Image (cartoon, rainbow, N blue to C red):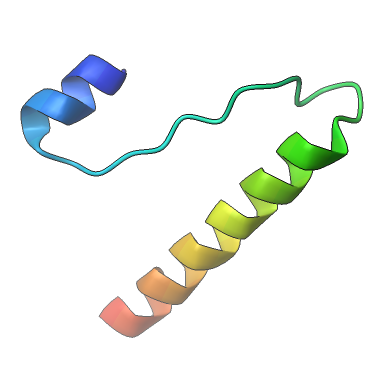
Length: 45
């Protein structure tokens, strides 16, 4: 997936860790990215 994003010239981030099982660092980072995506989507409309 990362290679496809690179070829398309799209920005991306990779989060490493375990999502299922309660890794609080991973959960917080994913939540931050989701909030950022929501803000961007709202500004586009």
